[in-house]
Image: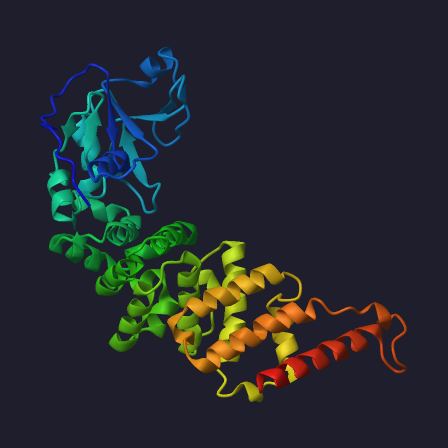
Length: 388
């Protein structure tokens, strides 16, 4: 990852309206990455002046304005002061006297506290460029601890860039973990950070940071209990390091609970319906694969598994799930491969069965019973072919 060498400028206080690009856009640009959404900060202005220039105000907690042409967001430079708990418990000052440096000082980490003027000049009062070059994540000020979401953000940035965390920042994160500051966060905010972290190449760094700083039990308590000992933590981290697919990493989370005899609580990891369904169905197959021998299951148990995992109603999703399970390092042995292959063939064959001739079912049988009898017969035949 190559750091672009910027020209650093000294910020001069001015009451003249000035616009700067800030935050992630500048950071990614300096890293040589394609920057996406751009955040703008405006100094030396006021809501009245912005409205006169044709901007539309949209911010409630603090003044944010939409550009009259591009519709991009422009925020007035502001300072923040913690006055109550929660991520909204701040009083803000967005007066025209607030400087760019004051605005940058309220940001979480130094690599996010870099600004760029409209001529491309870099303003870096907290040495964020130096930390980018050194691949270090460092908090800007003690105000970092006022928002516990920043714990997860630091862990996530470590996963995204594979950066080291400064010792003093690790100490602060650990103090926040011991104090359980993260309990104040909503589940939605926590899971949003988790989802992003699972999409990165170095996902394991996210969990390493939470473990080392005693924050894993705060945000993911069941997972923390499941991997309480160091050996299990190392196994969990090692597994994540082998995977690239985000969905497969979600299955690792569900498997880790199931394999350590903890009731799978998918809600600990997501509130997204599709992800919850994926983990729920995977957990059913985890239990099936955990059996010492496939012969321990009878045909009815296998049919019940296929029905509960929706294999007969949504075959495409079921086959995708089997492919994801095959990527897990837990299932590289012959027994697991055989069972996954069996389930795949069963889902393909059962869905093709024709029941039109069962309108007049045998005496003493309902149509439903006749359908199930044919399904069970098919399962038994295919199992026999597999030598199971």
